[in-house]
Image (tube, rainbow over all chains, first blue to last red; front, side, top):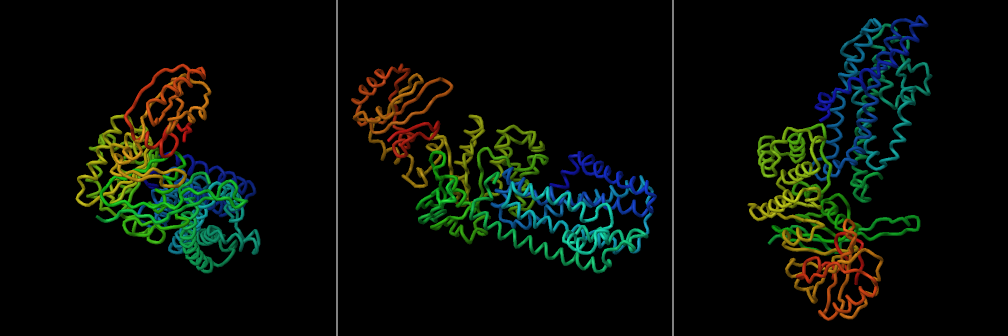
Length: 255
Length: 334
């Protein structure tokens, strides 16, 4: 459904390609005016491109059950002889698939506009890090979706709280090392922080100089986060589905 | 005959507005029903009577607070994974599916949730689209459909998985007269001609629909089953009286006074907004009470528009049991 939707609703080109390019351009011009090395423009372009993932996780994954309940689909999903986890995994795959291409296209456009040169240390590890980041972030999104099943409207506020601070703390537009280790460690709970840091290390010549942690450590943490968030999503979904059935919240709207 | 649904002292409570005070609202209280395979079973009750709560429990969406409910022999509490493959539900006014997908794509998607292979699923979808006169809309995105067409699609979604037990919650809501008639015919035919027994649990606001379709009916109010039988027997059991419909010009009136007239077994009324009239339904023990009613109405300054003696209907039985009409709810009676 999500993949078909991307093809049938070309408005995403504006919202998810053009709009993310605007802040990228803003930060890129700042770095440019400061005569910062070109790699810093690359950091910004990569970070800006990755915002599509975080936005998609928040509004497409975490909030999805809320929308499904409002539309009446959730009731039907619950009636079906399938695991709710399968629905979540399907949503995550659909979102990850479409976001995957958006990130790459945004990055390539940014790279072309600002003439950024890549110095890839290892294409294999760059790809692994990218995929692992997507997996870990969408696993977190699945876990958040479970909360939404119960907390409904209140969750809107949580989403707003999660959006801008994460953009800041995860270092979308600057190396996270700048924040210092305590804040960086806290930000690392959002997998995109470590994913971005690793990809910058692997894709740009100046990347290793601004590294928060070694790539291998970050990859290992990303694997752990993926497993923990997936297990968390499964546990919470079961728990909250039971609570939902007990309290009647699976089918009641605007709770 | 096997039992499709059985409940034992089934109860469900919700916290009411007085949650802080520990207040409880009983949506269902000690409901005992037994529905054999292969029949259309109706649930009749005014809004808030507990019909939807009962359906939600039976369809595994809600847990009971007390008692037990068995669907296809499985307990809704802990065997819901065995119940879900054999049930489906269609609710009136439902807005399910994804607007960006076509009718056929949406229906196919739901068949996949039931693990039906694509080829037989598409064959079944095609057949049902034809039956529901929706074939030409198969490739239309559902956000382009009218309410009635969307309801037809929902209806097909309910049948496409060929469930053993189907819950129909106001299924003809939003359908035009012809479509509603076709839908009723289809449901009755589906139950009668099925190779394996099919059971339908129907809630409806249309008495005629219930009368026409249901093999058995339960009348429910305030979470309790007040009566359960065939429509014919219900009418017979409750028909200890003569039914009169009196339409009067709209005005505040003395309902209590009308109710207390000797010989009035039951009284309900509803406001016919569009006509600026009030329709009063009286169940009388004898015709003699009618004169007193007319006298009272006249003395209260009403203009009588119409008086009609009617056959004892299911609605009359309902009024007698529940004390108010099923539709146009502004009623009171005894």
